[in-house]
Image (cartoon, rainbow, N blue to C red):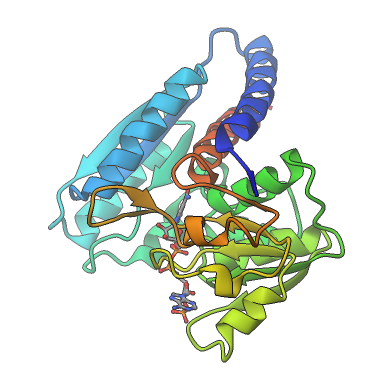
Length: 284
Ligand code: NAP
């Protein structure tokens, strides 16, 4: 089985980021786009993701700053704090770490974020653009990372049977749209899917985005399928794993992404790409 490593794809995206940054700095000398990572509370997974994202932005020659709010903040206070960041001319793009605590009405924040700063495609405007196949908006970084992973590894999507396990607004649904745009024939599975193993086995490209550690094993993978694992979990032994039981599929799959070192690496590279694109939008 071929292992599809995120680092190689990320390096390719880095080249594009450098080109775009050069274009941007030709328009506005010395300008370095700045990412605001907005976090409520101190979830260790969010904090670890945040550290990784900041490091990646700096590595790509970009700026990033975290904005932290207390877990028990009221909706009104968070709304006002978020709006300040949203309207700060020094902030080029925003990544809001989710889920937010229950007292905050997430939908209202999704509607508040300026579409041109909404790097992870949570605003209704960007979501609509993804669903319309209009590439001028920002798609959720993870969904876009899956497409990059396939394309950069010369894995054709057009005409292929694509099965996505998961229908969330941030991964499964937008990814279904992006795969359709690439002319894949898409099936989306969820907890009510009648025969999940059988449906998954039909896939030529299987994407696991269920948020369940090692849910999909060799029984879910058809011969020579390409398996893309979006999941990321900390196992009881402290090691990271995905939604796919990576060891069990080795003899079945044609190729698969590892966890860690797969889609997650590409996702932060896509975030950097979106940040520079937001800078270009700002300085048209
Ligand atoms: P989510 O909001 O929890 O959605 C999970 C989806 O999977 C739901 O649609 C759910 O179905 C479906 N599902 C759950 N268990 C299932 C089962 N046993 N059989 C079939 N379908 C099942 O999760 P998410 O935010 O989309 O994230 C998915 C995974 O990706 C998580 O592991 C997350 O950590 C990871 N993630 C990774 C990145 C990255 O950069 N690599 C970024 C974002 C998320 P129902 O709709 O029926 O409930």
